[in-house]
Picture 1: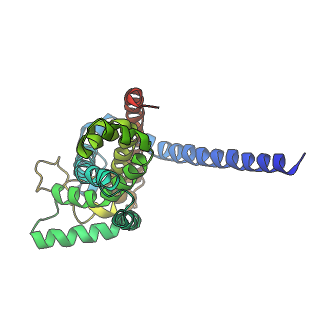
Picture 2: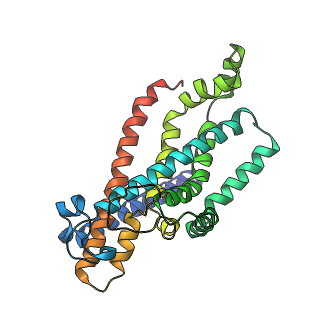
Amino acid sequence: MNWSRMEETIFKTLMIASTLVVLASLVLILATVLRRGLPALDLAMLTQTPTGGFYLGGEGGILNAIIGSLLLAGGATLLALLFGLPIALYLHVYAARSRHAEIARLVFDVLWGIPSIVYGIFGFTIMLILGIRASLLGGMITLACLEVPIIIRTMDETLATIPGELKEASFALGATRWETAFNIMVRQTTPGLLTAVLLAFGRGIGDAASVLFTAGYTDRLPDSLLGPAASLPLAVFFQLGTPFPAVQERAYASAFILTVIVLTLCLVSRWMTKRFDRNIIR
């Protein structure tokens, strides 16, 4: 066996081993959460609010946390998309290959790497300045700040895959930059843009540090943007931190529900991606 074939065999083995390690880790996580949380998992967990403060009661459910997490992550993702998509398009249509675009990308890379607790502190400070109490709105704004760099950089890399000839053909037909951006670039990269939105939503719905001081906590369902909202990550945090085994089992059940929500969104996203994939010019 020559060296090139041996080298290919070694790297192929490493790739297969890495894939198996990742898959095994995922299966182990799901199995652990399901095994520990299955005794507490019932219909009441999905349809009722908790009967004890900070989820410490043995009865009731986490409906308030499920609805709160969906509202927090959904609202934050919408805000991040409203700011992120125009910025990503600007970097490719109006500021392509400029120094300003490279500086902007560096800034967003840095923002992506900032720990979420720092965003929580930043959001809490802004709320104090604006006179906003811990609320659903405060949590949305803080999570939106966390998600904006994720959406921008992911969409930026997706838009970079568009062939330059496609944009030049659009300009040659008389389309403006604005028309090219939304009628050509957005349509051509819709599957990738959906992936960016899902990635940001998944980060938002699973984050606890940024909403710990900004979204607050309540045993009730969210009823106002200016009222507090519970979330699934904080439900897991409060329940798992108790010395009561029954409550800890509910924490694992909450973690499993959160995992199922993210998995469902991934499946829906893949289905939507296949539908939009037919519009892509190859």
